[in-house]
Length: 396
Ligand SMILES: [Zn+2]
Image 1: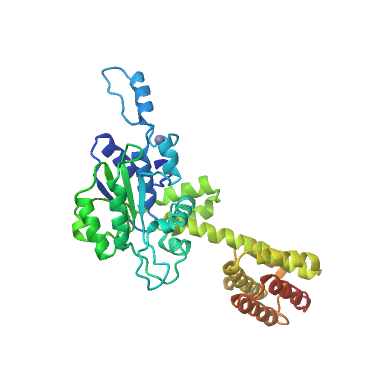
Image 2: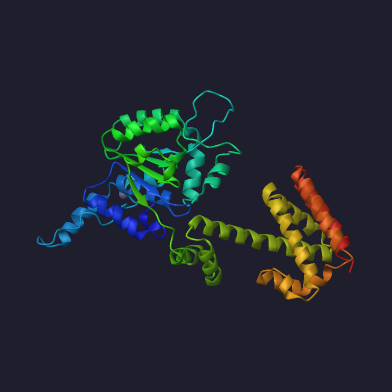
């Protein structure tokens, strides 16, 4: 991850670069900010920046461009994104880049130690696909249910061992700690010792959402950098330029996200899911009206491919659409809550949902929901629903 991929935290990025250029890198640094402010993207980008070995080429080039009187800038393009170190760091596979993050014990009640490396695949996948991930994103990525995630004592022993080795690439050894406030007591005490007397060329980079929960002795040993919420304009810019979101929608998402890039991205996901549900809803209403049984079967296979959780969301969506269309017939717009494309569809569709069939359709949707929750065969359940709809939709 490059600094340019960190959204809206330019002044912190500048501070980090200045710090490095002047040779004043603290051996323990902690980014403190709310969820979605970008503490982890900053931590990873800073780690890659420190590990990048592409600096010398840039240095010699620029020395030639500037006269003797003017000192050449020492750092121009870092991380370069091209050197071996950058490539390894960008894939989170750099041998001198270590991670500590909260996990749970896979076998309940077991006293056997649990280590972060047991979760490293899930960790990399999440971090690479969603650098602005949240705690609950991590909970579902690592398969946690109601467990309390912790950083265990065994992890501090593990990291102590790893950092005692010589850096395999000859540069820094970096330990990124996500949510250090989740370290349990014995882990905290061991980490305190390690931070007080760090092995040579070692830098700890922490990303914390609740630094007040950390031992004060740890806090006093690290340089804290407060990370403010992401400015609304920066979120808007990101949504329109990188995600192709229309200006109006981007403006409203940016505003309601309150400085959290994670919230903004979730809003996009929800929005695109709703669009997909709308398409599926429109399709099945048309197919059942036209009694196209073969296509109805295909449709049920497509819905079955959504996965159990999204099938439930889709059924909730269908219930909402049926209700909204029924209400639409009363010609009182203040009662309706539909997006533009949904309203446009309702103009012609609403008359098909009326007092003769609305209860029947809602009952069928509830039955579907129950059967899906009980792990019934989704293809059969949705196809069956479609067949019943062919009868219900004709009840005008
Ligand atoms: Zn590089």
